[in-house]
Amino acid sequence: MRVCNSSRTLGAFVTPTSTTTFHQSNSTPPPTAITTRHRSPDFIAPNSVEMASPNKHDSPIQAGLDESAELDRRIKGLPQELQDEILGLTVAIEPASVDIDRSYKPPWQLAINKALRQKVAQKYYSSTLFVTVVNDRDEIAILNWLSSLSADHRHLISEIRLCLGHNCTMCNHFDPNTMRDLRKRIWLGVHRQIISDLRVGGRVFKGKKIVEDDQGNTREVWL
Image 1 (cartoon, one colour):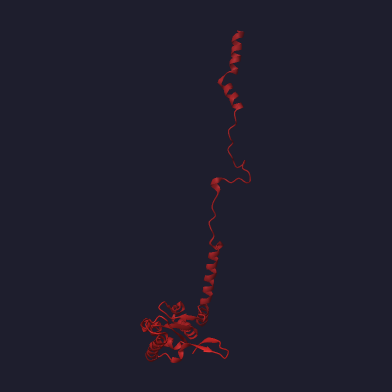
Image 2 (cartoon, one colour):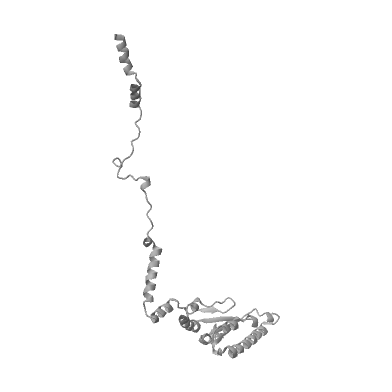
């Protein structure tokens, strides 16, 4: 029958397959997976990024350590006399004025090694101006300091400057002239002990004196 044929023809247009095909044609196509062929030259896959391990030779600190190690190796290859000379120049102590009080500490260069200590001590004790304040006998740090030194080091000392202090506790009730005289007596007693017991020559000690020239100008000198 014609009608049946028409229905069969119409059914061909409304089959599920045809409908699905119709909707797919009007929807957004699914994303295409990126393959090696589709990657641009600038593409970097997230999982392919690797952190470069630091090269120790690229570090400025490491480079400095390497240079120091190389210098140390070369110095150790020199004769011992030259090694001692280089070390002595490296830790040399410049002449200065040093206060001898309860807070005094010897320079660290004296504790490096025995051979170097002799050279450092020769320079240190002979060129340093040691300054101490004389108040009471109990406060005279110079006596304890000299007692702590070896005889060899004491003999190297070239100058000790003495300053008469103003905090003499036993002199608080005396006038300035009496205080000055008492401080001198205190120092003379200690000085005699230093000379007799510690064998330090009197020439080493210097006292401050005010001198005046012809024009009336005054200045301090150590005699």
